[in-house]
Image 1 (spheres, each protein chain N blue to C red):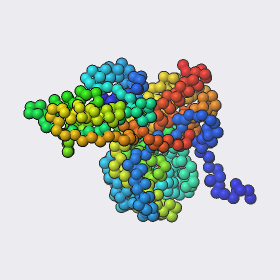
Image 2: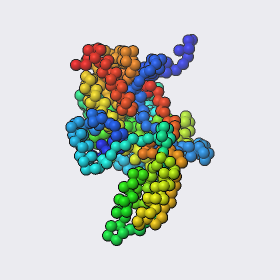
Image 3: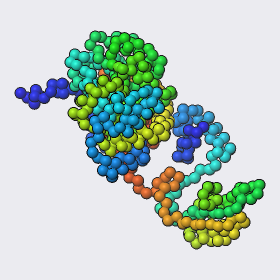
Image 4: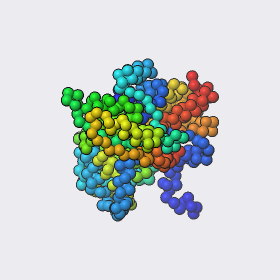
Length: 160
Length: 391
Ligand SMILES: Cc1ncc(COP(=O)(O)O)c(C=O)c1O
């Protein structure tokens, strides 16, 4: 049920009643559908998009390219799983191009991220190179823009 | 001689738009929330806006040819072929206009002679009747019925035809009713049109918002295609109302005649907006689909909610309006809307703004965010409760 997923993708806080009305379905059916999507881990979690720069507790983020060699039989899966166990790693993907993995890591400041890099990530077996880019300012995350887009629509009250 | 005697007497006696009148009332109130607009709520997709900006940056701000930029006409024809399976030639069959609005006007002025009648199914978009009268023809109304899904029936069409009839206006999906005509519906009226030889002016501006099936254009019927004039535009499909770009599709002989009026009165549609329209028509199918899904969801939502609070509302098949009957309140549509504005600060459009046939109905636009729709429903629910009309 792609339409349901698309609605939840943009707003995890829809009430089941609203979803049912929007989709022209029974509430029970929608609840059941969501439960099943959660159970099957199609819906893997619900998160809040936070502009940390505005929050009282700013955090640091970095993008890291990781070079590594695949293992016979297992390819990249085992090393990816090992790296992704670190809570500092917010996301990890296997990519094409100059590196094997791209990571987004978070820490309370740059020092913490550097520490993670030097003491955890770089020494990981199979990792033979990293390139780190600290994020200076986030403009858009998960489709939410953090700047003032000034896109208030000014439609008239009543038009033909 | 008074001022009123000096000016054109048709203009003098033209009824002011009921929407305009209601807007003037609503505009004087504070904190009004509205479900009254006839335009989508999306900001024009960025890739389209960017083309307009780019055109201005590059100094592409000269007049274009009268018919519009060749690339835009090619794009429009490819679009009609791709989405509605109708063939038109970019060189011979297209004029780019300043919105569907201009298109309606210059088509009417090209066709009409004094004494002609134009059949207008009502309730109808507010501009038709005024434009017909200004062109010097008479409006012959057909009242579309709610119980018939606001469709044009062959019986009604036959009844309205006479030797003075020049054309019939078709607006499906329709503003304000949301009614559509399916292929089967058209099959019943096409033989009548063919026999009578009148023109069908089909305003397909809401074509992309047809919910349960694909839009059927009457131009698909080859046996009458010569007598079909398609009017469409970018306002509703791509949320580009302020760009003011529309178009006419018709046979070459007609286009040549219509072009005379267009070239003397307008010259060409706004150039940067034509560039934006090229981007829309070539690369905007994805945007159309996203907006479509969102409108369909809101339609589902609002119609169920309206029925729940006691306003019987059939499921509209197209456009972005619900058009419920308010007859059981015993109020006229203007009384209903004025009291709703006074008591709940909620603005809807009274049905009689769309002609006498709209009396007893109100038009509710769902081109609003879900939060706005919810707030409006709560107000409407309270209003119906206070009036004792909720059961
Ligand atoms: C049925 C219909 N036709 C034509 C128009 C005119 O649209 P535009 O001039 O923006 O293309 C409208 C606008 O509300 C409409 O509802």
